[in-house]
Every structure is written in structure tokens, then in C-alpha cells.
Length: 539
Image 1: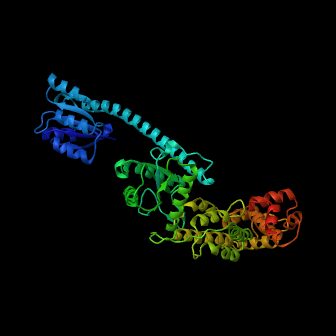
Image 2: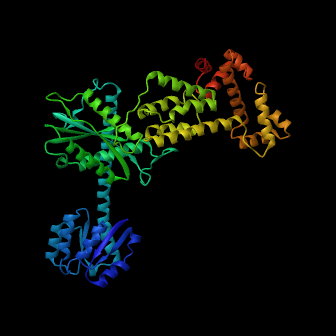
Image 3: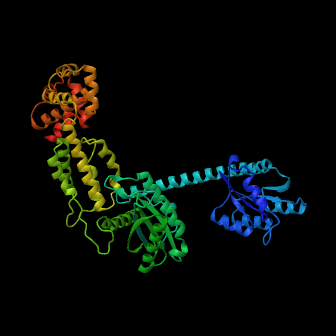
């Protein structure tokens, strides 16, 4: 609803406008009535109206003077002059000021006053609609440009950066600098933020899209706040996104930059970020690099980004990086060994082996492992196309990149381990149910899985009608009779493929499925891989 503020020095007029005109019924919000220009300005400073109705003849500052002041300070406020006078001179001055209407207030009925306001409101709504569309278009263009920047920095990091030329348009002001300093900034949104939630043991509650949006907003804010005066004379600034929760601030200069100047700039950047949202920000200040007369290359920029990311890695283990810590990098052999142990335990659905294999991921070593290696290894171990995982864990995988500290990371792993093991336990035993008949049916299926099992036959054995038995089975177990039978058969088939030398067609017959092709299709739907692939991985 459009907001209206009225100004008149006569009390009876203010009361008439406030009480006798049905503003809300007409789609307006009546903010109140000011007794003079000074009070009106004070009210506008607290809440800006869409439409100002003002009398002309008032002490100290008349209505035309107020209109001129408002027009200059708040140009988007629409103004309607209300006066008891019809003199041409007043009308001429009002037109010159660009007011939207001029009414003889004593000659107007409430409906006529509302009609005049509606006409102004129609123009105002069209203007608001156009402005919103323009703002939305600009926002989309900024987001597309930001996405291109992110893709470009990611491509730089894929190799050594030499294959990707410098994008001059994004490095305006620093591309020709003789000296370049990089400040890498990361942040963690705190739980007190309403718009963005913190990462927890249950996984990151902010989506990647929300994190990228926050990153883009902070980048734009830093560009707006850190002007040339704050950077220093003769210096330029370019801001590049790194992944979804880091920024690289590049400061370029024609002459060498003192360390205190870069440190001061980093503090100012942190203050800007902290003022924007409740978050904990960290920075890594790189050394000043000299290029001489040579242009900066993609390789140099990629090296700068990597150094900054490595510098922030220490904050994964400690909230402040006063003392540098050494981080261990995992070699390919260690990565393969740990991954194979976890994947094998997951494929066997062996809880004891799984907990033992994954313990290396939640044990703080000395020296600690580089967080980049930890997160990469986590993704390799938990691949839904290689191992069966509960849906809750598959959903959590999207939050791996948002695990920004050791405590959050280890809590995430502990919750994930418990979720997987609990899922296995639920599958291995029938649910506790008040119906002993259903428990008996589940036991019978597990003992006779290789036979031709029909719900009608088992229902007869427990003295239940077949259709009713099937309905109760689904309610108690959470899956229908055939789904449960097939799951038990695929569990038994996995054990046979792993622990025996039986051929695949022999395993198919041993679990009660005579159609070999149907068996292979069913096995893949349950495990994510074919029986041949499973047998080779377990061999």
C-alpha cells in the first residue's frame, strides 16, 4: 500500500484528513499528519512516504518551500499541493516545482481527494514497476558477469594457468601495474544471521546458490566502499571470486607498496564485511609481487590464487592464524589406500570395517592434513554411483565444500557415519512392530529367499487375508512385500559375489531369480553397479 503523509498547520484540517477520508479502503496507508514543515521533514527522515500532501500557508517554511526542499532531497516523493487559495501565482510556482497536483482543499469532497491521489498513485506505480524491472535486469546482468568470473578463476586453477589468458576487463586498474599484492578473504556466517545460516553437524543449511549470492554481494560492496582514496594514490583494485566463499582482492600499483599499507587495507576490507552481515572473516595477505614491464600472465595469477587459498587453509584448524602451521598434503598412494578401504567397507555394508576405515578422516593428525585434500578425499569415498547410501547422506554430500572448520567437518562426518550405520541396521532387521505376524513373515523371507515367495502363501501361514497382509506389511516395514524380498535377495547376492567363486548366473539362481537379465538389472538398481563390476571390485 502506498504511504501518504499530510502537512497542515490547522488542526481541524489535519483531523478531517486523518478521520474522514477512508484511506485504507482506497489502498493507501495514512502515515499521519504533521503540523508544519519541520515536523514533516523529521517524519520523512524516519520513514519515507510515497505521496506528500501539503498546505501552502504555514509559518516558518511554507508549503511551496517544503515542496522544493523535498523535491531536492527525496526526488522520488510525489507531491500534491492543498490550499485554500486559487491564485494563479501559487499555481504557477507549484507547476515550476514539478508538483503532481494542485487542489483547492475546501472545495474537494473526500472522494475527489482520493481520486486525485489515485491518479498520482497510478503514475507512481508505473514508475516503481519500471524501476524494479530495471533493477532486476541489472541484478541479473551482475550475477551473469559474476558467474563468468567464477568460471574463469576455476579454469585458471585447473592447470598451471598458462593455457588461459588474462581477462583484461575484470582486471581493469591492475593489469598494467608494476607491483601486485593479493589479499585473500574468507568468511563464515554466524548463527545470528537471519538471512544466512551457519554450517552445522547436520550439513550446511545455506545452499551453494545462497553462498554465491552472498559472495557476489560482498564483492560489490567492497568495490563500492574501498574507493581510490582508501586504497591509496596511484593504486587500483580488482576483485575475483574463488569457489563460493572466498574473494581475491588484487591491489596494483606503479610503485612498491609498503606492508603497513596493505595490512591497513586488509583491516578495512574486514570491517566492511563485518558491517554487512554477522560473520567471522579471515584474510591472508600475500607478498608484493613485481612484474617490471611485463604484463601479468595467467600462470602468475593462478599461483597468486593458490598461495592465498593455502594461506587461508590454516584457519580450518584454528580461528586465528597468529602462528603459522604446517599442513600435510596427501600423496596419490595414500589417497587410493584410504579411499579403497572406505569404499570396500561401504560395499560390504560392514559397520565395524567402515568405522575403522573412516577413523582416519576424523582423527586430527600431526601435522594436520590440508583441508583441500580432506574435502576432496571425502567426495571420493562417498560416491553414490559406487556405493549404496541412504538418501539423507546423498543430500548431505552437496554441503561438503561448506565445511569450513575442523569442528564442523568432524561433526559432519560423525553424523554421516551414524546415519549410514543406522540405515544398515534398519535394513538388516525388521522394524519392531506390534504385529508378530509381520515379524514372522520377515524372518521367513530371510530364511527362504531362494524360493518362489508369494504374499498369498505367507498370508495363509499367518492366518491373514492376502490383500490385508500386503497392506499391513507395507505399513509396518515401509516397503511392499516384493520390494522387501528383492532387497533381501540382492543383499545375499552381494555376499555370494564377494565371498564365493560362483558365476553370476549361478548367484542369480541361488537367490531365486531364474531370469539372468532381470537379475542384473535388479542388482544394479540396488547397488548402483552391475554384478560384473561389483565382482571385479571385490576381487
